Length: 187
Image (cartoon, rainbow, N blue to C red; front, side):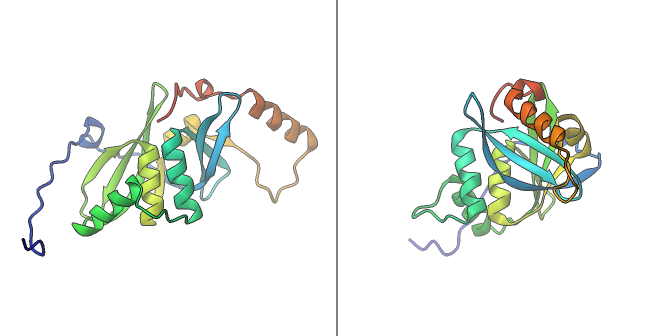
């Protein structure tokens, strides 16, 4: 059987969010890393504005947190993980990614869109979209309204920080929970 020439037919379910599009302003985000929220021991992927002081925490599942951490650290497993396989498939069918967009926060759930170079947009969980974006080395952007609603402003490290600000932030970290951001659990 010769597999050098074959046709691929793909059906993509486009969510209502993607169908109506997103026209708001987007801001650049970068992955700071994966952290554990205490005391619940829930993983959080922490994004930071590329040109600002706000951080966007998104609660994710343990498997997705591992996938994001591996991609960020450049860990190459002996066999491809799910997100590695997804990227291999996209490359095999010549469907390069353009960017990932964190587009909405509704009832504590974050929503994202994977944007292909062809213009096709597919709805995805932010954790999966971020893991894929890191592997494909494409930009991650977020809707200004989402970052405004769920973002946390942390002073720039280069600016002098007063001791009481440090104590206030430590107290905040000790008391913060996913419900504070309207997040009921992993996205």
